[in-house]
Image (cartoon, rainbow, N blue to C red):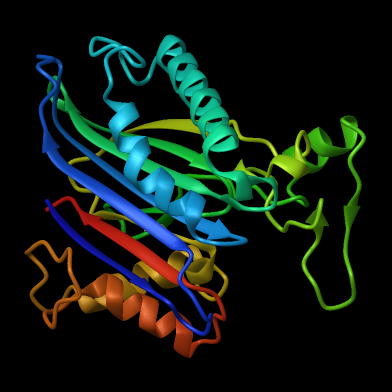
Length: 277
């Protein structure tokens, strides 16, 4: 298993993205070994909340007082622990970051681990970052749903609460001024902009190849399949090492993020690629 990652400022004056990674953890659970937790956070209105999440969320995630060690990730009970954790973090942000009225961040987490003899992947998504799997057939499969005001589920949720989605000529559809419908922070946009995630649990085939985690700055210009094909092409060169700094080696995450900017992305571009082999 190998991790490549990068976060580029792109054409923006500042980089409001943040990320973290925890590799090869062991929580003393005989059924859940070699845990890897990755996270990407796409901030808006400023970088404070995305940076806060990158520092605090991993600390809380494996706090046994919040999520018991023995809780099994694919169970409804575990999902309820995650929802309570996100309530807790949202309240911490409200109380500790005064700018959170008009500042927020999406959050995309991937937890990859061995469960008995199987490889499991849990994706916890809040916002419009996206996780894409390259399966054994080299097909790009979205593992998340983008939380945009115009997606069917989000539109239905927002309008039933009395929210109004607006769109100016040449602009994205927005709810309470935001083009994303779920996030941490954004206190003045509640309840329409929601802080609860969607949780997806997958079993990974031994021949599946990698996952891409990317902020919307990547997916604005790459579709799922073209991103997978770009990475597959770059894998022809040596990639079997961890690149967790801005290395001159074959950092495929940096290459695809750089290509996204060349293709016209105007946002910060953050990307992580976890290769399974």
